[in-house]
Image 1: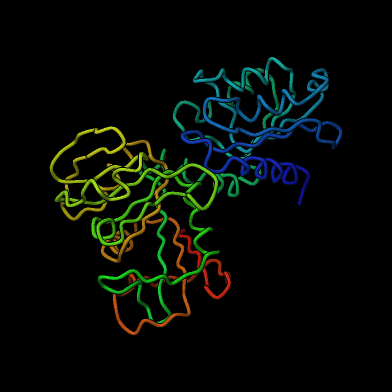
Image 2: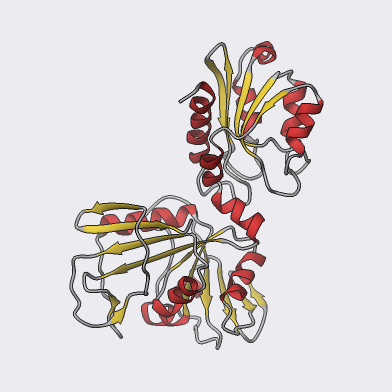
Length: 340
């Protein structure tokens, strides 16, 4: 590992500390180095607050040292005025002579403009250091802006003999540790989606009550408006959006969004995208999950494989991929897949 990669990895570590907290902004980490020593570092903690570069520069006690330092940042510094001033402008004003960038920001308001501003000011700019890792860090952000859809994460639990449950009854296939992990993941993704059958039969809350963090926006695919007001997701005060074929109406915490259900799963993702959602977990039954698999419209999948045998019931989705990672949580095997 060379020197640039070493400090860029630290940028990534810093950025990850705000996972799930920066939407709609990306996660960004920044390190300032002088004479092979870190003299300042920071990360973007929350949308509307200071960017990583601002926080890193602020952490340097003697600002005169910046004139002989290298600034490392996992994502291209911004060049536009948003809720905060341009970071590129601040870097120039502080006299930083060299900037090392992990990856270019594909967001149209930035996309190369920050780097051009720095270079035009005479600053040496090095790009593409750990670019793959930096893009993976903000895979949700890049998918949203480049593919104009949310980053799609599939999740389900299945028995040892390939069933996800039994008709008309709730069956727990995992354990408390797995439940906590699922709730943790809900805090890092913006939304979660289920079908109307799951909403009605299981009456889930779909919150992150077992782990401190933000609750996801809940989407329900319900073409014929079968969900009723007594369900948990309809009356607990958290945001729920009902994707249906009849109306668009905002009723406070519950919103009805009309969708053209013509068998094209892209229409569902377009509706989610229109709400500014960068990432979504697809749960529910096989009827909800399988269309995303068949259309190859998924980016990650988490399958919890239980040792429990059901013998019959609701078949798990038809999913034939090799796992990228596997681990065992008590007696449940968690398989993680990336649709590269």
